[in-house]
Image (tube, rainbow, N blue to C red; front, side):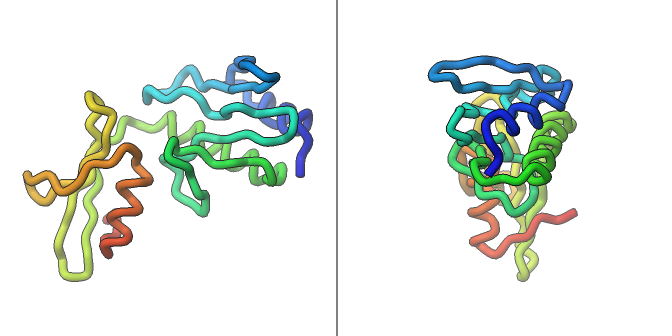
Length: 151
């Protein structure tokens, strides 16, 4: 496991991140150029080595919590650099418009973000199918129901 100082050095090597000291000696790092409302990339990095990186919009093997965060306590240097790079990229992307998801029978659902309510909605045509607080929640629902994202 990387030490707090090693993680700090890695994170601080990203010049686009701005350090914000918070309570209990924890540190956050913000990406001020984010095109999304979310600006925090690294959340509550603690001297004990625990901390989180925002990964809600990242495809990959990461298990996120309800806030879209991934615990980085046991990450290697390469893993930490990779997830931070991906997080910054996900916050740099053009605003989310919509995704089309289809099941084996050809049924389609559309996933859209409602910026006004800060919710993710799935639609069957014009009918609301479901509402979720996070992208990953909506994605997990669609995958459990047998839907796959169309490219």
